[in-house]
Amino acid sequence: MMVKYAANNRSEAFLFCLFALIISLSLCGCGGSFRSFPGEGDVSGSWNLVLTPTGASALAAKLCTLDQTDHNISGTTSDGGTITGTVSGKNIDLTINNAGGTTTTLAGTVDGDWKTMSGTYTSTGPDGSGNWSATKNIPLAPLSVTPTTATLSCTGTTGSASQTFTATGGTRSKYSVTASTNTSLITLSTTTLTTNGQFTVTANNTCGASGSVVNLAVTDTTTTVNLTVTITNP
Image (cartoon, rainbow, N blue to C red; front, side, top):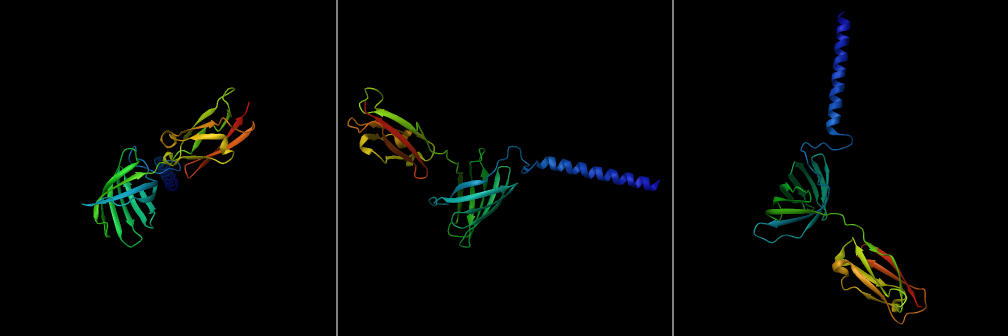
């Protein structure tokens, strides 16, 4: 009788432990990080950090790369420092161990969109103490141009003599466009290229033989998109 009672107790204890384990796993989620605050985001990514010492001008921006696992943060700075810290709700605390041996401690909050954060800092180095802010670097959409091809008439009597192209994505302020072949056959108008992404290609009246191809390259210094313009001479 006692053996049966002990066996039952062991079975009940095993089932209880199994149930507790299942509940624990469901709270953590499959393969995800456990967050104890509803709506909590993630600070993982690239950030531009600016320190503004009390009574002084803002220092040059420092690029920081953060990685968040649960509420713990690790990372590096572009000048060789290492970062540790924690985030709880919207409150964030970071410690930067600078390459020169000094330490910068930051305390602050993350804004609701999880793209900006700010607070106060103290440093054992020449940066002193003051306020800090950081903005997350949002990945740019890839550079693209439409249309990618066009056919232009020398005279315009049997078709269009010009075509307007539109570039999007990348870094618009760095847009440029060049022709690499048969450059004498066309005229490029790029006056609005860096403001609205548009440029116009016009076939010159004295163009060459029908079927000549002009190769164009649009770039933002990081990515290049190649285009072709075919010239017809009716």
